[in-house]
Length: 93
Image (tube, rainbow, N blue to C red; front, side):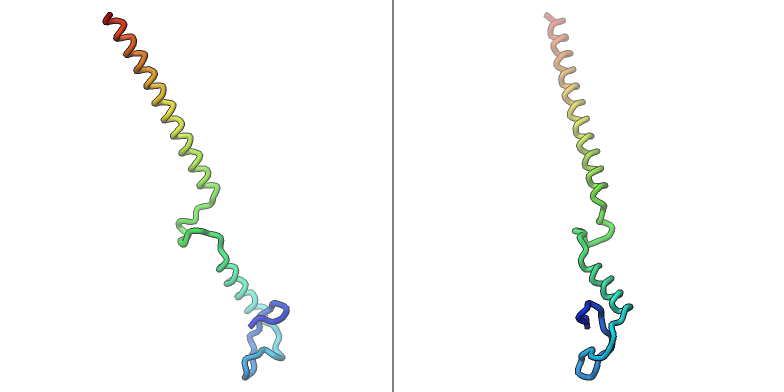
């Protein structure tokens, strides 16, 4: 049971109160460790999936760069094909 100044008691009398006992440092420490593990901010239930946010941002940035490079290459290839199509049609005339 938790005492008035936040420590935890381990000694109890027959009616279930901790009257006359001091707070136990070890029990308080174990209780605090258990409570701190309950208030996790991790949205994933498994540690394997808990990736730090900077890694997610890093991978997202590289994915955006990759998409940008692919779009640029496709635009340049389309422009190149239009020019080669124009030159072949001009040569036929």
